[in-house]
Image (tube, rainbow, N blue to C red; front, side, top):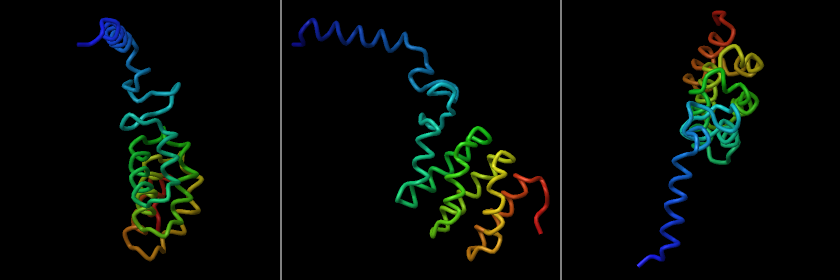
Length: 141
């Protein structure tokens, strides 16, 4: 049998959680720490940290997550630019997608994306071209 104090503490905790605003519980509409964008109940800064992970799969997944945030993911641009130099094609590909989804706010990535137009992986080169169009608004030859 549970001690009555333990049961009461559980009820109090449940009541406090229920009374806490959804945003404070990480269930807000895309907002967490202050006004930081969220994806999959994780704030942007955690996804940015994953962009620097050792495992290529983690970097790739993080790039897709960051890209889904669109222009709100502008703070991730430097980490995405670094990933354009990865040895792993899926990391380069997903990072180019993310930069394109960020759009004009990713303008500092234009030189790095231009280098990828001659990438040894045709899919990466094609995605770099698409990202450049989304960022600059200009057709790429």
